[in-house]
Length: 423
Image 1 (cartoon, helix red, strand yellow):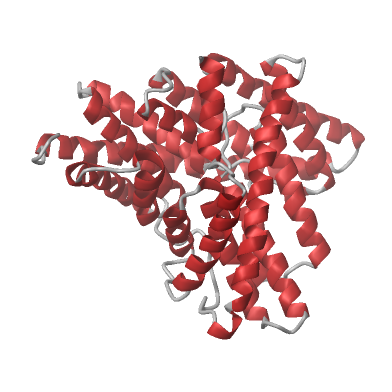
Image 2 (tube, one colour; image 1 turned 90 degrees about the horizontal axis):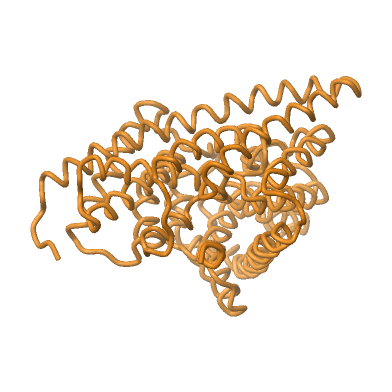
């Protein structure tokens, strides 16, 4: 084990972080630009039947292009986080350069087209693949290469969410599990340099704009226990849905190419009927502090996003579950908070707090990375730490529920599926 800092390796860490920040930031910028074009295309498709057929055909063609990327590099399927973990554990092997190119191309099309997929997992795999390619360029040994992969993978989190603290927590909780002080310096240097580039390109504004203070009076804390239980059961539904969805797709008597195209065809039909379902669900997060919708609509949004996520993610096309699961958590918290408000148990300003708390707990109990979940929500909302203790309470209760039912962390379960498939 290395006991002294290598300044050469420290410099390489910074260089890789700068490059990862640049590439992932461009990836993040391109997705909403394509999605805005898709939104215009939906309006075109809603005008008449002929336009609707044209819209569906465009979506099928996009699916065909994505299927080409999946055929060239099957390891770009899904979020990419299990693939990175598998490579670090020597359970999976794939060509990093091929994965980098095809993940960027396929990811931009799949996520940008408005399917219910997140950009964050793909950002992790893009960052990690870039880190591996550059580590080979610098002719680093296997141990140092893994450190660069971890650092650049975590850089995908900070570039996707503008959340460097969460990226560090993610590296420790999800990728490393444990580390040395020296390696921690290299990883942190990569994340910091990536964060600087992201701030220069995109800015450092929080992903979620919160108008009100998130300070929850103690008299409302009793409701956090029931919120945590509700989120815990939602996490069970989410994880089981993903795993069963994978099984169903595996049993379908069709080629992988058709499986890749199918989500685009199905999603195009739903988008023609309801354009609000476009994208990962980011637009639902702010509902609680704006013109909120009724309970039935919140219930509808929650299950529709779950359904569309399962259809897209389980097919094997590139795209993550990060933002969809956060959006579903926010809808669940909004639903619960709205019920309490209707019963005159909380004020209207508290609904957004329950929405944010549920987001953190949903992530913590699904991914089993509670520190990352807590820091992520705090950074996404602009560093507001005045509701940190309520976050801990809800995350802990939701975590205990999933633990009690022996629900495995989703990325570990997905990794097991990949290892068995490739063995």
